[in-house]
Each structure stands twice: as structure tokens, then as C-alpha cells.
Amino acid sequence: MPFFNQSIFHPAVFLLTGIPGFESYHAWLSIPFCCLYAIAISGNGMILFVILTESSLHEPMYYFLSMLSFTDLGLCLSTLVTMLRIFWFNAQEISFDACISQMFFIHGFTFMESSVLLVMAFDRFIAICNPLRYATILTNSRIIKVGFAIVIRGTTALVPLLLLLKRLSFCRSHVLHHSYCFHPDVMKLSCTDTKINSAFGLAIVISTAGIDSVLILLSYVLIIHSVLSIASPKERKKAFGTCVSHISAVAIFYIPMISLSLVHRFGKHAPPLVHTLIANVYLLIPPVMNPIIYSVKTKQIRKAVLKIFLSKLI
Image 1: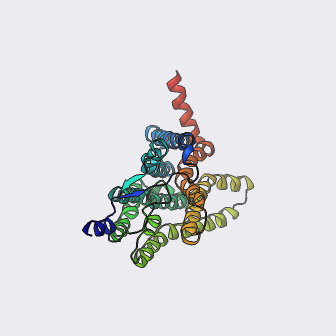
Image 2: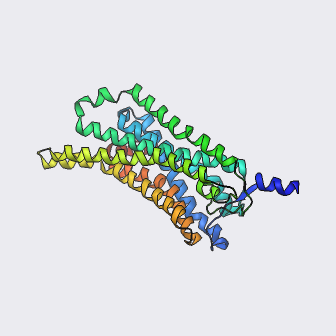
Image 3: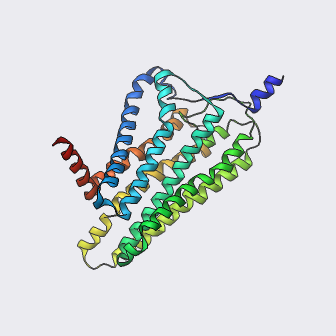
């Protein structure tokens, strides 16, 4: 009986899930996933390296882009090990403490990325609506403070959330729906009341990603109002052109996040494959697409990358 109680309150392991229905093809499915991880890690690593080494890119806009690449790298590395363990070795087990740690990094980097996207929207707002004060507002010291604030904001809210999770009892199936630990997924396996956990988790999401998305939208309303007051069509096009990369980054971050949240809250009867696909899109597509978008759309980044490649060849 004591062993039974211990298994209820302190689960030894959770079982992660690969792609439901395709277990026999996991070795082959690992190939596209490895390619996506390679693109994400090399692309974001390249952007970080280019911004750090090229003095011409030592400007607020590119500092914020380096923060975005850093959070994307963090998201990739947070899930890389568990994902490949499942696909290569069918190793689904993850200890409860390791699961808590993985959730800390996944949700922490997610909230940090949301904050970075908000700061980048503010950067575009200042650059377009108040260009004469851009350099005096976004000084290096302020950018450093903003970076620290983003890290603190993204991590401190998670500590009480995860401590609340550790207090739950788990007496149902320990099989998770994803190839990584996700807070709502773990919480659903509890056999005790999770109302406080759900309410606190929702409050954190609203106070971070929710507020960030509203402020980003407000920033673009003000940007559009300012751009439309520009007389020259050419200048309007140029002003809007500087925002295309950021708008794309916002879309590929928030759309999968909202989709995953909706599936967890309202898609209880959805096929497991739907949960898995949306969960993988949520964590892999933004890190893969962001370096591609900024390399293609940002002339300065593209030139700096080509310069480094050519110097290596010569």
C-alpha cells in the first residue's frame, strides 16, 4: 500500500509520445525533423554570429533580432534531446523532475520570445513615427536593461506555476500527448483538483503573450496611421517594407500558439495526431522560419552573411 501511494503522488516517469500511428516509421520521420533542427540551429546561430561580429549591425534593430535568434535557439535545444530519443531509440520515459525542468525552459523561452516581438514592434514604431529621437530613446544601456527585463519576466512567473504543478497527485495514465513536456498536457493527467493551476496558468498567458499581442497590434495601428500621413507613395512603401519581416515573425509565432491553446482547451475529442502536429509546428516552425525571413527580407543581414561566406571561401 505505501508503494501505491508513492506512485500516486510522485510519479517516477512520464511517457512522451512521438507521432501516433506512425511508430514503426519513427526512424524515417526523424530525417525531416533533424533537417528542421539543423536549419533552425544553424540559421539562428549564423544570425547571432553575424550581428556580434559585424560592427555595421550594432544597432537596436539588430540587437533585438539577436535576442529573437537566442530565444529560438533556446526553444530548439529545449526539445531536441527528447524528440530525437523518441525517434531514434523509442525512449519515451522522462522523469518528473526532468519534465518540470523542460517545461521551465520551453515556456520560459516562449514568453521571452513574445516579449522580444513586442520590443521589436516598439522599435519599428519609434523608427517610423519618431525617427529623429530613435537613437536617443534606444540607447545601448536601455537595450541591455530591456534584455534583462525580458529574461526576468519570462522566468519569474513560471516558478510558482511549476511549484503548483509539483503539488498535484498523478494516479491516471502517465502518457503525454507530445514529444516534450507541456504544462496543460501534464496538468490533465492529475487526479486532483487543478482549478488553481488552470486559473494561474491562464493568468500568466494573458499577462504575457496576451498583453504582448494586444500591444503589438496597437503599435501597428499607430504605425499605419503614421505611414498613411506620408505624402510620397515611395516613402510609404519603404516604411511598410521595414515591417514585413516582423509581421511575418509575429504571425508564425502567435498563430501556432493560439492553435495549440485552442486544441488543448476545446479539442478533447480531436485525434491525437492533430495534437502532435500542432505541438511540433508550435515549437519548430518559428525557429526555422525566422532566420530565413530575416535573411531574405533584410538586406543588411543578407550582405553580412554573404560577406562571411565569401571571406571563408577566399
